[in-house]
Length: 239
Ligand code: ADP
Image (cartoon, rainbow, N blue to C red; front, side):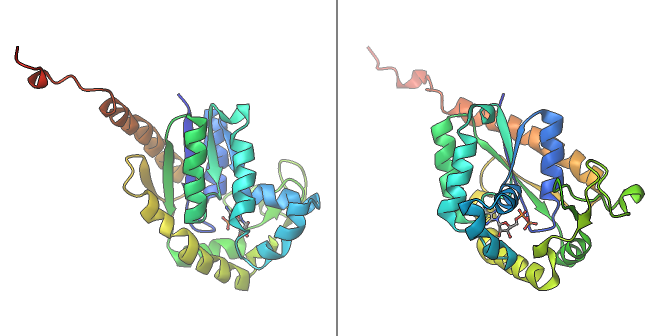
């Protein structure tokens, strides 16, 4: 059965790390809008050229651009067995568009996981975050062999993301509060909405995440059954 998961949470909550891991373990397509945009910037595509300044300022790229990118990706055949979305939706307009895409795909409901981390932890995590300048992987802050400045996967150099500087981080957190946190209200009453404590060690977060996703996948079944036509004998006309 297709698992369609979105990872929500503020910048630095660990969405990317967890999305990558869960997608690998379950053999699902991972779609990270941040990675797609960073690749577009590197390749100097038209989207990359317009997105660059916006991202460096910690602001959101416009909804029509983001919706077009995600729609194009999720409608491809390899996305039909399920996906893990990291970084989308980030606005209510994007969430509405995603609901429309899901209806078009007709591939089962969305499982929404909100990774919750206190703000003081986020600021600290983002200040220390290093990514590989070549493959984009996060340096593992818990791995002592990666404390050097080279990526274990490809040997690339670890650098700070341009949008992880302190002033841009504060802007991104503000943008999150204003534009993205309202999504919790948008999703919270769905039977497939779950919360995970992201302040724990990554391993623990991964375990909790897998457990809540499985429970959410099971929770959607009764909803389906409820939609089947009901046979109610009391309504039979008396002959
Ligand atoms: P983080 O979750 O740590 O903020 P991302 O890599 O997901 O990092 O995103 C980096 C930047 O890319 C965002 O600050 C924003 O400028 C842009 N971006 C990514 N996804 C979206 C989106 N869905 N809508 C608008 N902008 C986006």
